[in-house]
Image (cartoon, rainbow, N blue to C red):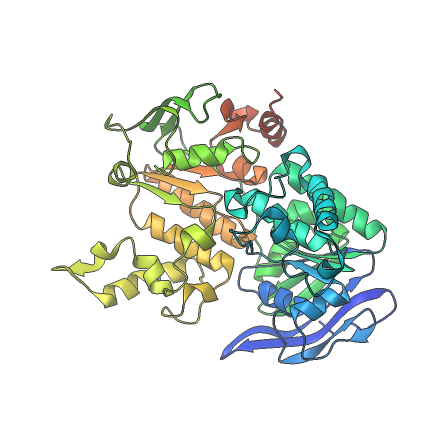
Length: 504
């Protein structure tokens, strides 16, 4: 695709950007542009170069070659985030960047001291922050004096978004910025994006979610192997077309489903009370099925997910495995072969300083041990088979896992859990920040596991994912089980209505 030319209606023009990391080419002749007053989406598989593009545009990285024009002026090669912000570019990065020991207010104004912070009193900063958070979260907004470490993941992400919005940028870059948001906060963010573009500001939206593109975007650029292979108007950007452009092959979405024959109870939750004021509920988790958990942030879905994996102790109630043994301590859940994939891969999932190989094998070293000695060749063989199966993009098995894209990190975290041979696999938002192709791979793997009798519980912030992959969906509201949907009642509208406590 040829490089676009700067013009008066173009806010941003990136031409022939190239960025390498040693022998790895992250971007190769990457060209794209953003029109003033528009929302431009960028979509691509994990490892396609999206994060590198974001870092270059935001000033966090320098390109090896190519040029960037912003507001009609060519940006110098030496640039940084501070200069990018000063020029009117604000970025919400994929990783949720929060300093836990600082307050909500200080996190929102973090890094702005050289721009506007020194000219505003603390009271003025508080007023602006309160207004922005209120628009994003309404009555659910945290107090400005709350420490960030007390916030749930979705609220942390809202704080990082507010950090960019207080700047009133000419260009707002959202890199998977809705991955942890609940429906209400996401919709409020969409309203803010629409208000921004209506007054001439622009948004660059990096996302894997097709519905977000349909709602927000004016144009879509598809990135594959470091190159923008095509830019098309959103009216032409059908999911089938985008998936084909992303992967270079045709793919179709499918509705998964499994047989209900001969299912037994793998895990029984009886009279569970998640919060002191909540009513008790009971639910059976069956072998060979996928049970979905849906809720707004803070309404019980995440809490019950952690209870099922032994990471949260309910106020009262019993969790019993298929052998009628009560599960109380975390070690009981491990002994019962209940595996857990966490929601926040950065703080709970990966061992950032360890290699891909070590992250993959750390829970299953005994599989490759001979006389208490781990046979490294066996570990490498097992890893190679996994990497080929899921199309893992990496340089070598010994590179630090933190060098991989988020989606490729997620593949390793999931594989680590699957390799333990679980009877019950509990997944907390497992496809957060994962591209559509990888989602298909993960969903196919889940179905292969259910065919072997594994019970799978998946808590997801994406209603479409729950509808496509689950046999039943348990909908939570106010930390109580509101309803369980299955068969003909398993519809997106009914799930959403239940999340808001309204019977559909």
